[in-house]
Image (cartoon, rainbow, N blue to C red; front, side):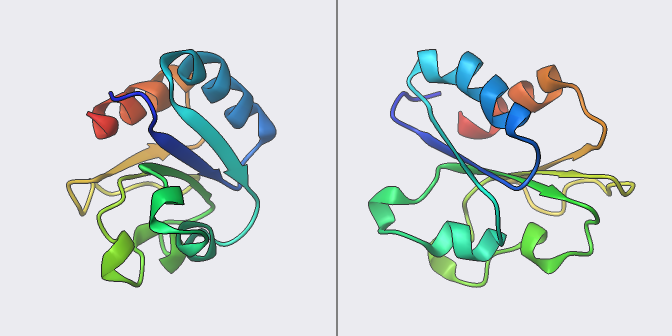
Amino acid sequence: MVSGQRVLVVNGQSETEEVLKAILEPRGIQIDRLQGEYNHAVHAGSANDSPHLVVVHEKSIDAPVATHSNTAKHQNIPRVIIGSAVMPPALERNQHYLQHPFQYSELIQAIEQLLK
């Protein structure tokens, strides 16, 4: 992982943000949280503000906002998708699925793998 990277947590509990901040911010990784739509969150701001990884809490993998971004500019941002439905194997190399309920150790491991 490279310090100065940014992880954006979309939806989910504030506890997720707190745990990620406690573990990853000392390593130089900025953690931000947004309640709202994934595409809006990723497209907001300049290219310099774009996250290096997005953690999306979804109720179902069928939600189109979780599985892809609509522009080429952001299509390669890695994503960890957390959902309550049974998750299929990752459809893209830069996606990791966790079934809710999840362990924070699994989430940290997924983030570390995708940020390498």
